[in-house]
Length: 207
Image (cartoon, rainbow, N blue to C red; front, side, top):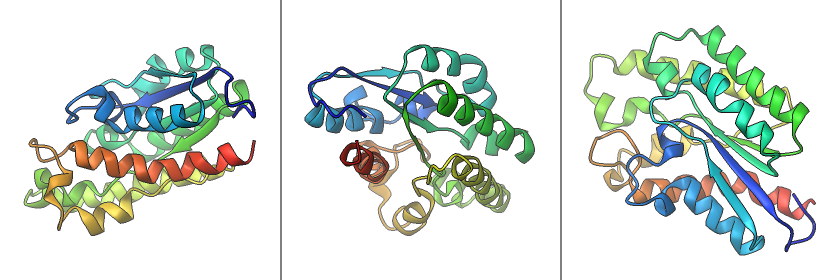
């Protein structure tokens, strides 16, 4: 990211409903909005372009968000994707291929710092905790996190772990989940932003 703290900076967020901010009381309360606020504390001229769409799968991001993200020439790009692939009929191989294609193009065609998060443990959310699908969703979450990790590390990007903290915290902190029993609440998004900032902050210091 720019050494000049007064330089214009473009932050592009790609992904699904968590990127769009479903469950947040305002765009500023989403994790993307919170990351933007943290960025602006360092880069006052940082601009956010949020491409997130509720319900998006990895294929949707690849087809509908990636080209625009590249065209914007971002300095920072975050990608949060996977739950709709996990709960849908998307194969692990297709998901890994899609994520690899997205990250590969962002790495080759932009100079963006890339930040990717592992999925939280969907099986411990109220929506799935007592569901017959719990074990399947839990198993697929682990498998898809493996795919995310492989795709990211192949490009030298260490994914931010939301899985471990979610397993530990969600069962004892119900306030982290929105009223739908699935998406993060304002408090949940604040925690996401705190964790994801660990993937951004070192890159500010390094440039």
